[in-house]
Image (cartoon, rainbow, N blue to C red):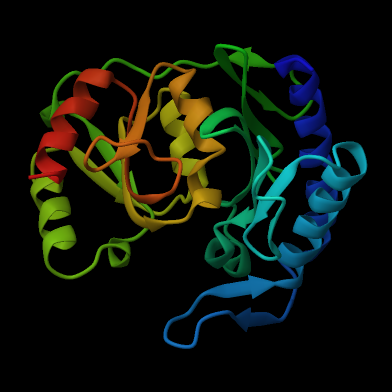
Length: 261
């Protein structure tokens, strides 16, 4: 089975999930809290979309593994495993903001080989295929995307979803040091910010506390567009944690030096 075959399949998964999610968006839907100590929202839209994706994977590729935010993991020993966040940015979703998306990634062993971010409300889709990355808006033809050159921190535009992601102490301090050296920082975005980086509109995304389903799909999109994604220590980002993504590998090296110090 080739990557192109999986790319077509991942597109069908995204379409099915979008059709499931959109009827819930900007409606008076109920919100549950998954955490006993914090606010970790989940909606029926999250649950329904992941169920649609999981059932489609199980029907077409019953031997594959599946890692989902809402329904857990099946067949973790499988070589090929789908990693899914049905709505990355649930807080934005429940506020009616369009800064959310469905993340669908494919792991081959420990390596992310395919990724897609679908935003059905704005009709934007970003994905990797082969050694390239693409985006499509509405019914327009897909177009390749590339990160932009930005070799210096002083010229970089950085984003993170929210400063509360960083734990008090070392994490907050390291992020503040990096923030003081870049040109501009904006908050908000979740997965959408990473895709704008891949498309060449921003330069750095720095976050902490991520789970695998928050980042696996985004790694091949960014790296096939010319960027780099690792932990703050420069290690593989597949397991989540503290993440730094940069459009320019030279910028990534400088950011890692600040964040790992």
